[in-house]
Length: 264
Image (cartoon, rainbow, N blue to C red; front, side):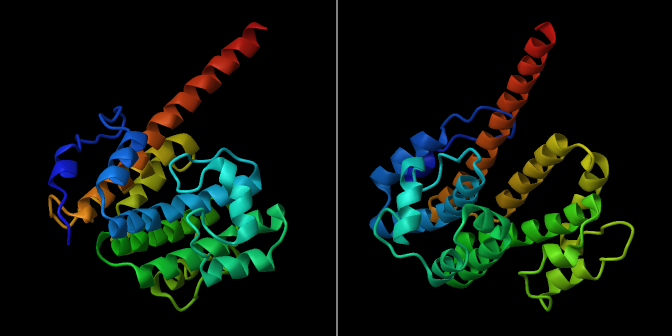
């Protein structure tokens, strides 16, 4: 395994709520210039989750995350050709999804199916930090589905219709279908006070969950200072830091818009 002494020495500390000393765009330039070809492919696999989220945003007419592999100008052609911009063919689960659902509205509506297949595929194919990261992302997604279904009065069995009901985590969530309150699995018990305190404030809940996710990702690092896993861990946390700051900017813009409308 290649060790990246130079890259590792350039990674400044990260802290939620503070502007990072090295932005994602600058980090990506360094990675493209210093990683081996095989490790660059692993970084691409890490960023696939952002690509899929950007597909959803594209189908729903929402803003795209510029940190993915696929640029905004490439998304339409990428989906038409069933292959990534680097020429790699779409995996079967993604091709099947696009062939089953044709309209943007259908693809947006059934996106949960696509994300479930994505995580299953990646957990089976990856190893080390990347495998642990995708497993954590899958579990967080399911736990949040359980909470949101209870909070909004939705049928959780319908929300989890694309998941395996025999999966222990899915079964635990489904078992609470008729309960008055939602209890996260033991492994995620620290989310309970977060749900209780911020459950009725979407922005504050999102921020609190971002902090939780940031700290959990730190724990996924295996401790090797100069390994690719550390760089991937750093990238995952950097995305969260930048998204947090973007949320604050959006909130500020909304406040200014409200003031201006009041003046007019």
